[in-house]
Length: 363
Ligand code: F6P
Image (cartoon, helix red, strand yellow):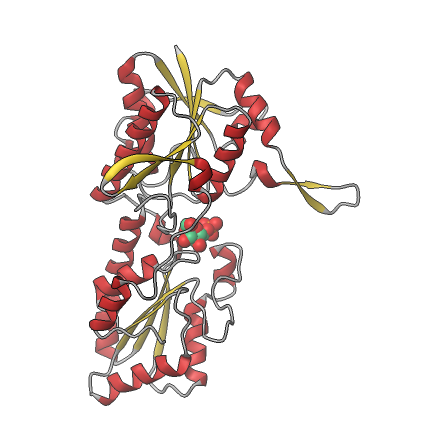
């Protein structure tokens, strides 16, 4: 029997378990492969003894409906930049990919499928260059990878954000308030823009379109002048105010960002300082956007990605990453996959259409 290793790295994302199940089922059907999972990304491989589990019907059956990842995940222990203390006690970063590649080979794996975002796929690419037979599988709720038209988890995140937005609209309307809702997305505005369109927000602030606080205030004033008396704003965590001041992305993790207060609170403060009179309330959705059961669309996409990744293993097309392009499940080289990001085009149709609906981007 040949041995396949699967791991999940970076932030969790609805659909990860559906991918794992897709890979497992496709591999078992051939009766040629045993499938293993490394716990907490590649940390399980490097652990002594290795923390690797065998995937079986009993631990994989039915997991596609569950959020999170049965293999656990982490942002810590990146082998490309592994933190160690030098002789002065300072933290320095070491490249440990060679040791990782050797360990994977010594454990006798014939193939590896690495599920993760841009950081994880950089690791996949480095391992491939060191001779590891590896396939990348993209994952992110942010939808910010240019090598694939979409990623699983994104639709679920947008749905969760939209459900929350809908709830905020009724309370905004009842109290004549300005409601600011902050969503995730790292440095991309996809979750914010889709949520704002789906929910019918009056204002949407995204990193790709730096906003002018006076224009945001003017939009609010015009709504109150017309007697409607409430405004719902969606702001992406990476949003920037005009003038180059970084508002949202000057933080390493969302947890740190939340400790700093979140951009929703910063926007609220800016609006009050600019003379905005109505009452303002802030909501920061945070990790709720990544939790819970994946919606049907993401389960399907994730399952297809899993089956496609195993197909690439069978065809020995290592050094490739699964991709969904032009309505087709395909593959791109890892080298290409890690080159670029996908951001909202400020002049693209989505923004144009949102503006046609009366939405302000504060520009
Ligand atoms: O990349 C997914 C994501 O949820 C981003 O939207 C967000 O900026 C980040 O991960 C949060 O990371 P952490 O869970 O480490 O705080």
